Image 1: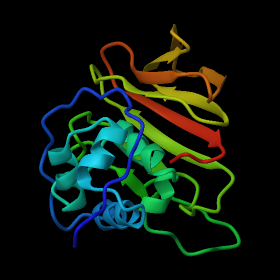
Image 2: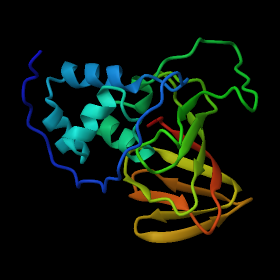
Image 3: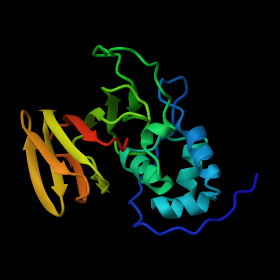
Length: 212
């Protein structure tokens, strides 16, 4: 099948790391086929979407073919380039009156040993559904890991640092948020984050409207 070209604004390219090959038999969502479908619906070639998302065409091809799991930063860049939420690329969950996740039951949206080199993990604490008005994640950021971002989109975000510390950059200003502390900012301000110090960081991160 031949994809038609589409003109697109160029975003700054993100620094790339060597992606780790995905393992088989995991419970991770099948991002690749859904990403390919969304790209083809918009009549974008691999090259077109790669330019819009600021990543390489080869990386995008590997993601679509299930050979690598994209990092948090790449997932956000791809969804923004396609004009969708990340949840559109993930498997929806069964609707319930009340959803309770045990410590090992939360849907894992990203696993560090399979991600595109940044080592982050992201577990959803709210059932994945593109109709949601609220988004909640438990994000683990590895010690010494790269910046996630920068991101900029509509909405508001609040977080609670459970363990470790987070280096949060909002509109060029750096904030160190230690364990037990919270943060809040408006999402239309450019923002990025990573673990601060010698240990990994665990953050409960809530934002509305959903972007993941």
